[in-house]
Amino acid sequence: MTTALNIALSKGRILEEGLPLLERAGIRPTENPLKSRKLILDTNLPEVKLTIIRAADVPTYVQFGAADLGIAGKDVLMEYEGDGLYELLDLKIARCRMMVAEPKSLASRDDPDSWTRLRIATKYVKTTQRHFAAKGIQTDIIKLYGSMELAPLVGLSDRIVDLVDTGNTLKANGLAEVEHIADISAWLVANRASMKMKQQALKSLVNRLEQAVA
Ligand code: AMP
Image (cartoon, rainbow, N blue to C red):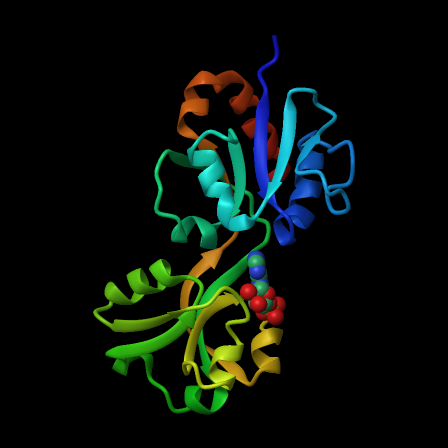
């Protein structure tokens, strides 16, 4: 008997860069997830299904066993405070960095070593608090759900914490990077119970993904 395996992943960069990786691991959805409106997709392997959900929901699905495996950005995993999740493998896709950024004019005379209290707009509230608490810096955080780059332009906050890849979005909005918080990439995560109950099937899939990453 084959063991059913459900992999949760999100649309956007993770799906775009994850599909070629899954393909190299021998997993091909039977219809194009970039176009389909279906939320659960069959693959060429009858036992493997892909569940397409919001990025921030991937850890929740995996923790509660609604998916055996998930592909989630390290940014999402750092912000998620549940347990019951194993981080199995760095898939080395959707790579970027989490940075503190501020207007270029401020960056030219700002010294991060002198920071004692910061007002920051971000969607990464917990990660930002943790990062600065470890350095003894107090933070007043304004929670946003997107377009953090706008905050300094409209006077919400001078500083933001956001993901940066090419740096073009920051540059286009007159912002500059001032502090590195973390390197980010997508990770394969697994449900703790599935790791025990579906050990064989998971192991073989993880091995194939490991080779695909290499
Ligand atoms: P860039 O202009 O290439 O530096 O990209 C920055 C914009 O893309 C920001 O709005 C980021 O939030 C978003 N971004 C960059 N890399 C990623 C990623 N790996 N996953 C999700 N969003 C990203």
